[in-house]
Length: 257
Image (cartoon, rainbow, N blue to C red; front, side):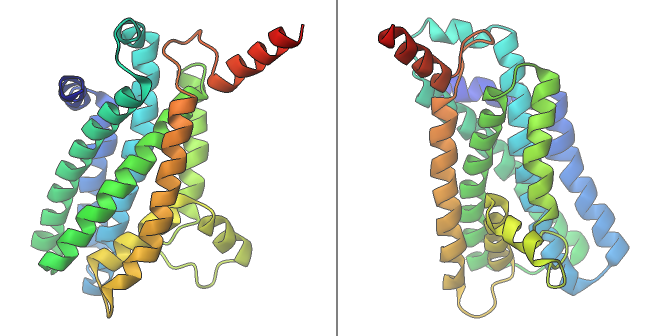
């Protein structure tokens, strides 16, 4: 599995979507918004927002496109001929994506300290690492799910956008929802990105008891488990293969005849 993960990680650095969404986009966003607002208090929210948005778009959208492209090229058909299990493949892809997210997050964090004057202690860094790990696994699995539900690249673009943008707009990644309609707040609370943003906000700038982090982190972990199970159950080795639930339905219909 480590060999597969290493191969995927090298492929990620050669992928255009990865370079734009995972590397260029978060660094440019942090530098641009940080220099524009030039507010020390907002710098902490900005750092938290950039880190979580990088996970949202980098893990979800880029993973969905990568999975779809590899499936269409027949890469998964070759893997299917080996004893490599679906769960192991999902774990390898998630591991490579996690390594990339941690590297980019380290660069973003270093830039925030140098350019924006953000002050972080060892506790903050440890909590941030914990949240990054949970969030990357969750949204990488969500990217798998988007690809598994898609038929082509146009379809995967639509589904991943429908997943990502509502989560971003109903969160407090870059702005407060104190004066937003209650239904917007409620919808945000039903999605994993809200708890990623909340947990990262506490980790970046802990005020008072750091144990406040554990509730949103626990809920995010619950979403992670659900997304991983859904990703494994809906996984398709090739574009023509029916998803899990369709195969099961077809089997039940054949048995009843």
